[in-house]
Length: 636
Image (cartoon, rainbow, N blue to C red; front, side):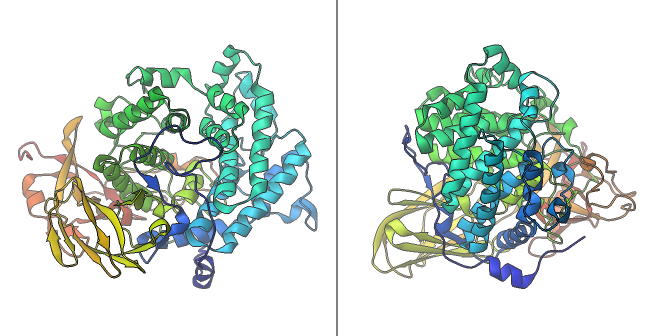
C-alpha cells in the first residue's frame, strides 16, 4: 500500500501560530446567546498543543493523508454534477477520479469533501499550520463556484433530483446526510479558520433548503425523515445561533424526527433494531436545541439516550452497534461479531458526551469518553499506513479491515479524518477560575484568560506517573480539578511534593495561588481486572487500567484474507473470514487470570502463551477480546 508518511512533510504541517474560534459545546455563542448556563467550557483547539505521544503520531499520519487528496479530486464530482469546467489543461481528463463511496456512480459522493472541510479546519486550529487553511480555502473557493453555477443556493456532488426522490419517498441512499457533511464543514471553516465565504456558502445552502421545504405537507415531512439525514438539524441550529435568522430555526425544527425523539421524551427506550448512526445525530441536535432554547425536554432526551446507550448497548471498547444497528440490550452477547462498533457511532457518541460534560461535569461522563477514545478511536488508525477501519470487530479471531488511500471513503473514513485531528478537544475544560484536567495526554495548555500555562508531561499509559507543571509571570489564584479515575483504586496526588487527599471516581479540587514552576504529580497505578457483560456474565473482557487488552493471534490463515480493503467493492468490510486459528481457545478460568504475568510495560502473557496487548496496538492480525468464562472456575 502507498505510504504517505514523509518526515519532512510532517514537519511542514506542524508549525505554530493560528487564529480560530470554536463551536465546541459550552463555548461558542453567535448572535443567539446560549439560553442555559454551562458548568464547564471547552478550550479553543488553538489553546492546546499536543506533545509527543501516540495521539500526536496518529494526528500526523491523519494530516498527511488529508493533504494528499487534492482539492481538484475532491471537487471533481461537484463540478461534474454542476457542469463546471475544472479549469485544468485538458479539462476533466487530467483529474484522477476518486473511488469507493466517492465514485461518480455512488449516491453518497461528496460527503468526504465535507469531512475534509471540517478536518482541515480542525488541523489548522490544532497545529497553526497555514497549509491546512490553504487546503480549506481552496475547497471553499471551488464549492462557491459550483454553487454559483447551480444558481439557487444548492450545493452538492449529485444533482438535486436525489433530494426530489427523497421527498417522494422513492429509493435513494442518503442525500441529506451528504448535504449535512458539506454544511457542517463550511460552518467549521468559518468558525475555526475564519473563512467568511464558507459562511456565505452555508447560508445559501440553508436558504435553498428553506425554499425547498417550506410549505410542504406534514405527510411529506414525515416521509422524507424516514431516510437518513445525518446531523442536518444540528447544522441548522448552529447556523441559527450564528445568524439569528428564524428560517434556520424553522429548518432545525423541520428535521425533528417524531418517531425517534418522542419515545425518548417519554422516557422510553425504543431503539429496536434502528440504524445506530442515523439515530445518534438526531439526539445531538436535541442537545443543541437545549443549549439554544433552554428546552428541558431536549436535555432530558439527550441525557436519557446517553445513559441507556452507555449502560445497555456499549461494548467493552466504548463502541455500540452490530452491523450498524441497535439490538435489544439483553441480547448483547449474541452480537459479539466481526461487525461491531461502527466507528462513526463512537465519533458521534463522543460529540454527545462533550455536551453532557459541559452541562454537568462528572467522572462517569469523562470516564466513558476516555474509554471510547483509547480503546476505539485511537486504534481505528493503522500505524503502518495511516488508513482506518470501519468496524471494530470483537468476535474471537476477527481483525480490523483498513481503507485504501483513494478507493474507499466510507463514512468512517470521513469521520476518521476529523477524529484524529481533534484529540486535544477534551483534555481540559474550564469555568471561571476553575480548570478541569480530564485526560492524561501529553500537551501544553495556554489558559490565556488567567495568564497561566499548564504543561502536562506524561508517558501514560506506559507509566502511571504524570506531572502537571504551572508557568505564569504572576501568581494566579485558581482551582485545578484533577479527575481521579474509577479504574485506579489507590490514586496519589502531590502538590509541590506535598501529598493531598484524593479518592477514586472523584475530582480533586486544588485551590491555591499558583506560582511559576509549581507542580502537581499524579500517580494512578493500573491493575488488571475482568469486566463481565451485564446481559451475560459468562462473557468477560480484560482491562489494564482504562485499556482494553486483547490476545494477539498472529496472521495464521490470513492467505486470501488480507486486512486491506478491496477497492473494487464499496462495502467489502463485510466479506472477511473471521475465525480462531486451530489449537487456540478463547475460554478463561480464574486460575488463568490469576496467573497472567507482565512481560513489558503494556504486554502480558497468559498461561497458554497468548500475549495480551492494548487493543489499540493490535493491527494486521487476529485477536480475542471477549473470553468465555469457564463455569467450573467461577469468577467473582
